[in-house]
Length: 340
Image (cartoon, rainbow, N blue to C red; front, top):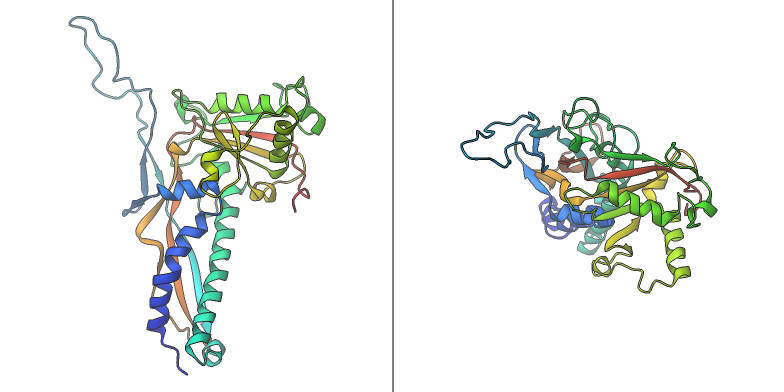
């Protein structure tokens, strides 16, 4: 039986690509909400207007007093390089020979596309939490967006506006006397690294123009400690109900969902190297080219291989428009083997 690749393409486009675009991002609460507001671009770079409330063009004026017409701050936009995520759906000649009826073809396509989706999901999730700077072809990670590296063509330190400097809190630094690597200190309300105190400070640090963070992301070990504290204090409903409606499990702190992410732990270098992110999603997001948002291309048969492949492309990047509205705490206990 000769496979009808036009029919396979139609099946992939109708059934799998919409699901692939959806499910790749919907394994994480953060990416679920960011993909819902993902924007498009169609130029060589992703140009993102920066969002801040410190414009010198707003002032009180007296009678006949002159007022500001131009900007005193020249930084108005960040420019991000789009990067390509390439996935391939491959059918070998042996696959063609084994797919001897319509049912076998359907089963083969479904299994291969499900495996491809899982692989893409893993790649996107791991990249989001990675600690290393993006290689030439990679999307930006949270550690770059909320950190001290230059992104968008704008430095994070030096002569830059205060609203472009991320809040990076080193829990092992001089601001703290007690030990964030000791579990007893994390759950002792008399200690300065008591988890509820850390949550309060992280929210305070990331609050911008009276807007609090919209999500807190941390390792599973810390999530479980917070749940334990809620249970021992009998605080009533500890779960965030708005997030529960989306099918996610999240603790609630001042109306902000707290979610765990195992890929934060994968990115660690040791058991005392945990990160807690306090994020405001209003200033974070994905951009994709309108012609390559998990879009398929024509089948290609290489000259040196008995196979035929379809490429599925996503061309874009993750961006940030205000770093001050974000906070990351570093150096907290998070055993790498805890949920491994």
